[in-house]
Length: 143
Image (cartoon, rainbow, N blue to C red; front, side, top):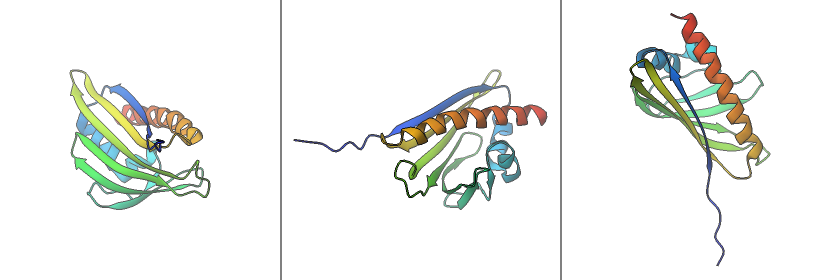
């Protein structure tokens, strides 16, 4: 008996940030701040809100807010329509903020990469590291 593989992969990035959850939350939910570290957007922290992320590389991601728990959890779809199945991505990004004694533990998981999407998966692993570096730099400037 053969089974069809439906297993998906996730990119997980975790960082200890020396900023309170409220400050990180603003950076994750205010469009002008999101643009500074991630991409141009028309985001609103409202469940069901559809929005786009527009990359410098010319791509447009179609997104929808799935969960909003202020200063704790933010989740949205991160979909990229592409003719090449290896890049045609349907995924979910979830940010989890956990207060610590020195700031916030920030966890980001992007789930939904199929095993045949190795290049997209690798690109996301690299891309999120860059996004988080820009986020940290932006938050440090805002102090």
